[in-house]
Image (tube, rainbow, N blue to C red; front, side, top):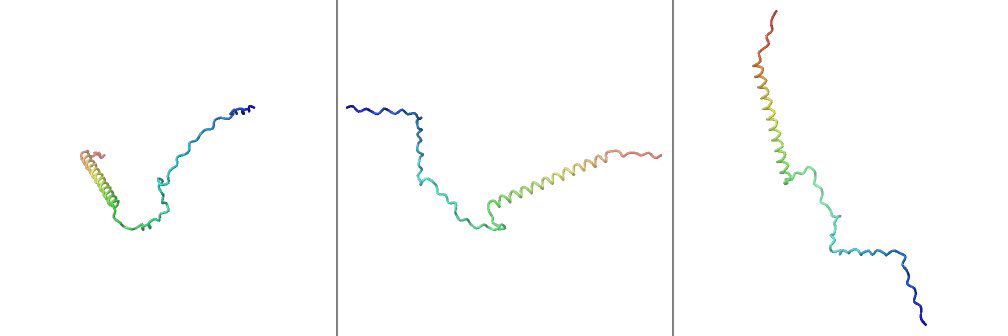
Length: 101
């Protein structure tokens, strides 16, 4: 006798989306972080040590002081110029004559 084949099932659900497996990284490529290192002792605040930064800050402070003195000198020269002009103008002006009655 002939056996009946089972009827093909109809799919009523949507196709499932295939997800690609994420690429696995080998543990040799991941850098090891050393966050729990012991740190050096902090140096006291008032220690003196000559470094390159000491040289740079000294040079910058000297330049700032020189520029400040130069500006003060220019202000003094301008003040003297105005004083000479004022005294010259005062000498050139005739004195007011007051009449006695």
